[in-house]
Image (cartoon, rainbow, N blue to C red; front, side, top):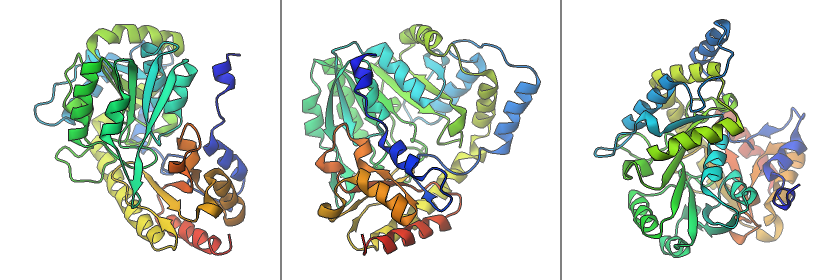
Length: 396
């Protein structure tokens, strides 16, 4: 096998989950998904499609009607003055992960320089390495539990030799998001250096700050259609469809036909019955997403104060996403977050993701940090989890 593949690190989140698989006594908050099932009307649309015999290949780029629906949906989320998003800029993909990998395949050659903002979901840094890229990370910095970007440091890292900038905002795991001013500065700078921007914006609707259009700032609000910008989205988070594996890309129109070729050589197409379900999800987004966001905000506002009340715990409310990223301040006891997360499973029956999972190499910024997915249908489970953590801490 290629050395780049052999050198890939096993998912630390999976390592923790494997330690607790099959244990009914563990409260599981390690994966990034809600425990709420996909709404019945979305499931019914997929069932109807299967019953009608829609079991054949579809267009590489997705059903035309779904691409049109995504274009309308994405345009409707944009701020006043933003460029409309046409269907010729849309490719339907087999999940957000597939969308990200397709973008990497389209843009990166072996040896290219890639800059990524971390901490971040590990797939976003593993994929450039799989492509043979040279990866440079610029880390956010925690200030009183709230993660912040040193814009000067990031701009200095992006040079004419930088092929691609990877930004995930709202961010998994920290909840950090880019401001409009930061997006504008990055776009102007990357235009000057000729650098592509790959923006993972799958959490844009899971946003808890005041916003005119009900979502986090997007590069699509300020970019021209032909900018070197690729934006990744997914049905997983905002529509409770993680297991359906359906996402989409927004890209410059001249790039779309070539992306269709890449889709052909990766997955051929997304399943038709899943695309039919997505059409219904988009048509009835007001029946899903606003209620989901309101519930997640309740979950966040329940969990964070409970964590803040624990001695030696540092955490701030996430601005977006579905995670509380918190630190156990006693570094001598809890510095290795992977070991700590495994201990919590065995000794406290509490399943969390280790902070080290979101850095390319173990780094000071990740030591002692844990990620708690608060997307719980039963808010009381969050309190139960904090009780287990509180009982465990004094005797750890």
